[in-house]
Length: 129
Image (cartoon, rainbow, N blue to C red; front, side):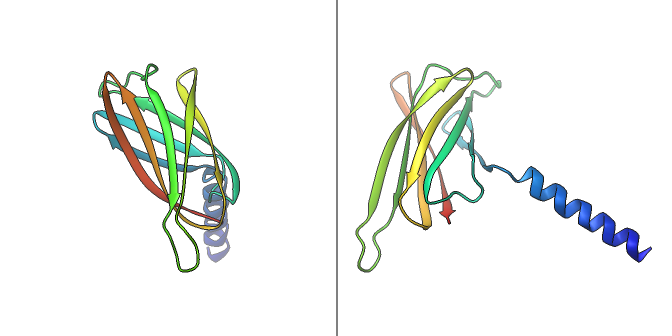
């Protein structure tokens, strides 16, 4: 019985490691549902590829927005604040962007969606390693 429990726990641990491949965030931005996946979990110093899906309340993909990703790190003793922006490009149903994180630590990330003369934002933080 003890061996069986150990085997089950090992399978669960390995399964969770396999499925936790991308860094994933799902949040609302105004009337939109936004899902962001970053190809590294945790994000790393250097290039991190992002995929962004935006849907309306009925689940229909939004494909006619201008999407920007803004990422920043606040000032710390001996270091000024850092702030960067990049445009996301639509490919199929997803917007793609690349963030280049210049150092390890906590980054504030905002996905800004401009559509029909209005802008909505979805914000989250991620710790880069």
